[in-house]
Every structure is written in C-alpha cells, then in structure tokens.
Image 1 (tube, rainbow, N blue to C red):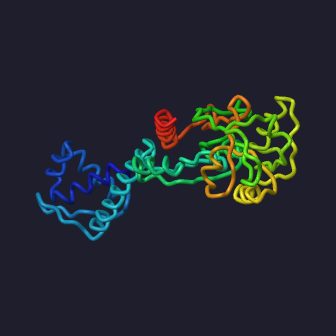
Image 2 (cartoon, helix red, strand yellow):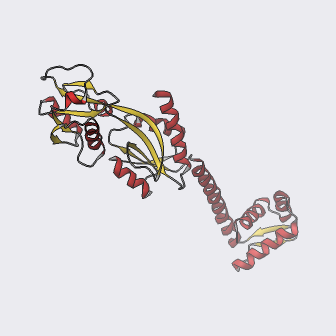
Image 3 (cartoon, rainbow, N blue to C red):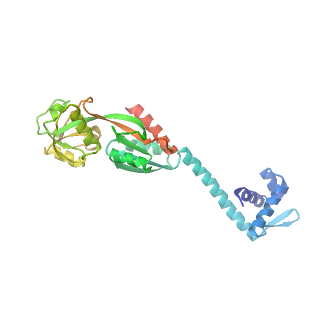
Length: 295
C-alpha cells in the first residue's frame, strides 16, 4: 500500500459509498474499486462488505481506517516540518563564538528567536583557532572569530573592528587618554590569553610590527582574574573593548591604543563550497542587517 491508497480508503469510509468517494477524489469509480480490491488482496483481509449500493466496514476495515488517519496525518506533519526546516523556520542553529568577542550576541539571538521561534540552538564558546576547526569538522555551521587568521577554507563576513585598551590600577600615574605601544612597552604586562592563541598573538604582533619589546610578567586567560590583578597593581594589561564591556566595576584606569597600532576585526565564518542550512542563511542575513545598522 502507498499513501495514495490510504487516502482513497479514508474517502471511501467517510463518504460511505464508493461512488461518492470517487466523486470526492475526482476519479472514476472503476479505478477506485480496483484500488480497494488490491488493498484487500495485499492485506489478505476483507475491508468492506458490499450490500447492493451500500457498504459496511469489517473490523479489519475499521482498524485500517484508524491507522490510515494516523499515517496520513504523520505524512502531512513530516511534509510541513521538512518544509519549515528547508525555509529555516525550524531546525537548529549551530554557532561558535570567540570568548567575549561579540557582546551583542544575546540581543542578536533574541531578535532571531522572535523571527524564528521554533529554531533550537547549539552554541559553543572557544578561541578563534579552535572554532575554525569546529567549522571544518561541521560541528558548528557558523563561528564568530577574531581576525587575522588563515581563512582559505572559509567564506567570511566582516562584522566590525574592535579597538584595544591599555589598563592600569588607579594607583599608577595617570596617562593621556590615548597611549602608544612605545609608552606601554616598559610597563609590567599581563597578557589576556595564553601563547599561540588569538589575543596573545595580536598583542605580540603589534609590538613586533613597531620593533618594540614588551615587558611581559604573566599570562592570564581568565579575564575576571586579570582585572582583579590589574586593579591591585600586580601588573598592567592590554584588553579588547568587549572585555571592558563584559567586566565592569573594577577600579582601573583605561587608555585607548590608536587603531593604527592595534585593533582586531571580528568576522563570521562558514565553510566554503558546502551546504549551508536555511537556518544559518537566515541568521547571516539578520546579522548583516544588525551590524549594518548598529556599527
């Protein structure tokens, strides 16, 4: 049996006559009778008893009608769900985000949820390099990362450029609102990352570009601990703007580093030449609209 035959049988039961069912289905009566006979032969059971122009349904016929309703309803639900997933209305958004790189992400997800309330989410937070690997392995479809990185395998959408700030305790002598890397290099620096990872590389690369040698006394990937250490004058640090927005309330002084000396682009990446779900496509469109208007 196929789904079409089940629909034919439902019509026969609900109309009570083969002729009326044929009219409802917009087919002639003989083919409908043939389908009914074929179903009975396949099941090895009599489904209807013909009494002249009227028909009665056997217990087997009543059982089949019950299951036919369920199966056709499931088929319609399956078609609807697949269509919704195809349109990005349903499905799962799998996304990675670099640690504290997109402070607006909760607001963005709220907007997306409002437009697509049936979508579920899988969100992973990690360093940019690891996020790239997760995208390559298809564990997440999209990732928000700090650049620069080698992105030959990926398509990328630039979101915004993030400035960096030099932070000290309030006990240190105040500086101008904007400070250069040359001024910073002699301060005891705590790097807000560990060797080989994103922010650590960006800071060292910036000093190297200007042929400067920073005085590094520590590495600390826990930003809240780093802020506490700086506020107690254990050392100074250089942090991206999002870290300052995420960790407020510490008694520190903040000085901007010129963008031409140090800044980082934040971008959204996905794998080139691979299928991208409609849910992910819809999120990319919303993200582009959000940052076009807000940055």
